Length: 210
Length: 216
Image (cartoon, rainbow over all chains, first blue to last red; front, side):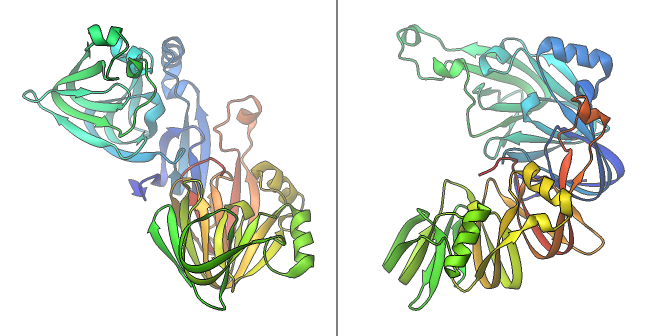
């Protein structure tokens, strides 16, 4: 149902069903479509309150109709993710669209959020269906297995899925304090079994400055 | 002379003796051979009358004439470039999105307000494109700039295409466009989906849409 038209435009074929997409991200459609803003990201009243409290803002709209709808946002590269009952953790600003059948929620990320400049909470997408996530430049998908843990720059991390534990680790030492840091003083370490999506670009983060 | 795409952000054109082409002023990146660039005060073809027309319509972009023999590379601002080949039909495009075009094409200005009456007037205001647009007609190639990649969507009779005004780049063929609104009470109370205005393009032809909602 989700397909890519080029690498920066997402085409969704709808036959009377619905998708959730980032507010205002429609660029074109043919056929009949109706757009409706979902208050609080479509998680009901409780989800809305949680979002307000956690600052993990996500403004989504529901698109329903017959035909093909095209989505794009600020020329970001788009990656399709298929979910089969597992959970995808993604920053709200990197989520473009999901199947209407997928549930979205908010989860606590701990210290990582602080360093990656995304706040202490992240968005979860779970269920069975497809989701489209955005990255600045084409993202690489890195597999993590119990033998091979992965360390990621907080600014380049966009999403992960699977059974992964994440730790925040810092390499702050004498040199960093003297202002001779390498700019790589903080990393997120992923252990377990799953996939991590990394973009070839770094957001401005607190961690990147030291 | 068709444009050759070097990469997604650069095109190369071959200029021969007696051939002319127009490009946005300052868009030349490199050239080989003996090529001259002359600023074109008139902003394109058609003499003084057309020049005044374009000034009045606000569709006057600084253009230059490229003549001589050699190859010229064009690019501007790191924007993606889409090459559109015309074979007798008319391309409608905003003047500031034009990177370069063949001298064989006829350039004109079209009053958009004439399509769709009052709504046509509103359309120009809402989309920020103004009431006029530039048309290119004939046989030849055009290089158009867009932010992000461009997708081409066919328009067939009975199957109109709706486009976000900010993502619209250009269209060609026998197409009428009008502004369609989906304003509901939700938009009035500030709970809109951000898709209140759309351009509805119907007829037969194709529309080019960019993967971004940013203007150039």
